[in-house]
Length: 597
Image (tube, rainbow, N blue to C red; front, side, top):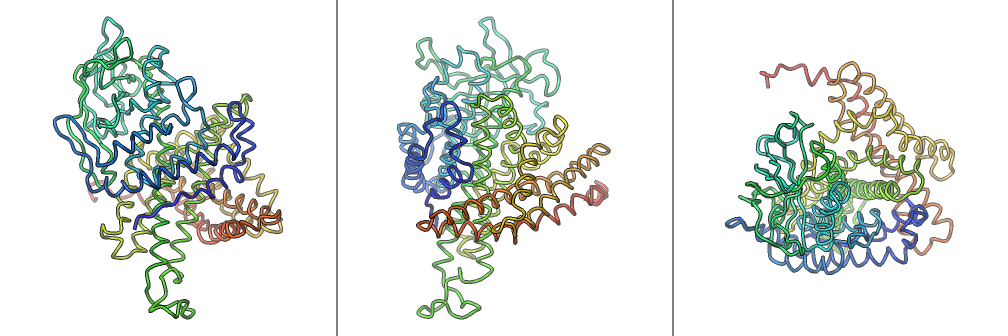
């Protein structure tokens, strides 16, 4: 069955103990972000996720969205849930106070996002897209447009979308055909068609603010000729009230494998009135502000679904009676032992747990660096945080979504035949998780971004905020009496990453296809090592807590130590074959003639 209890203790561990509250409260505007303030917010978010959104997850999957004559109706309960979401102030959590937001840190917001995604990923997409559009407008729109559109978006009365993909082009946006014709009043008439537009039409908000990529007349060919425009569903009167319907409408919705309660729309723009965001022909710069925000959010989607799948699998493994323990009956009073006694089930559950908690730590680390990049008064520290975030964005997006899908698949396997049918609900996790590996840039594109753009940028500058602290940690803890036994194996994994980085840098200079051939394996290797580093840090924190009077939570910290050991001994060794594949090069995958496929 679908079961979910927000992992609040682990969230607090990441925020306060592993990443550290001290680095947050030192930032301007975050001085009061102590556990006394942040923990109650997480607790209230957990109630919303568990009591309001989780019960609608299956409902949304069964009913889906309904499209009729340009209107989209969301499933039963979604309008009421969205109203409660807005009235609770959740749409404004991390938005700037300048526009009516609460100004809370992204490292707190991302944990709230995880809970929403775990409970109901389809619902989470509606406010999630709005948040991305908010960031693009806040950074690139004119002051006049900000004053009109940001307050109602922060309030949740208006929602936002991102319109990139067209029927003939996805990743290669240089091919897009949507046109923007300038008008005498400074606006533009937008004409074209877009597909796969999440939340492009729905009945939750009063207005929908579309951010649309289009090409002006005489714009340069390719990606350098793309501009970004704000195109509202309803035009806005001078007093802020809604005016007539604009020429932007949904012509249909997609019938999908998963996230069925999220309206994925085909959009038509027929001389729709819009306004330029940012500079002409610089639309990709503005859109990437939104896309990078969304890529981190999509990674958290993978984490959320992976956590819900794990919890559902644990519930079933403790309830399902099947066979006896190989070491003798553990529950002789029952007809059989629950399947959680079996080593292979333990392997699956421990793997899921290690991935989830490691990914939560990684997302927390990146989110904290986002806070630092936006708030720190130290220019060098801000630059370091920006470099780190740029480096880790493709890793978080691809790794967390890959692992979320793998965890959902493991949950289905643990349920066996009962997992394959709808009754228990875990097959929904598998279907819902799959899209996250595709949208906001496929995971293959993320891997190419990592090796093609981030790895060599500024003579390797982006790598330093990761490689340097990891190297320092190994040196400082290799002889540690408690975790030294784990540091040695980790050092080998980190060495594999260093070798792979050097190999790709050299081979890619001679032949770009060599870097492309290694990209996906390199991203997985990078992610595995990053999680290993965080697991070692978690083990160090857990040992210190136990030594300093943590007896009241001994079970929590001992579980951390057990999972850290499992990760280092059973998962981290995957680094070696990944390195071997990378060093093998492109020859084997490129040798076959195209016609032979």
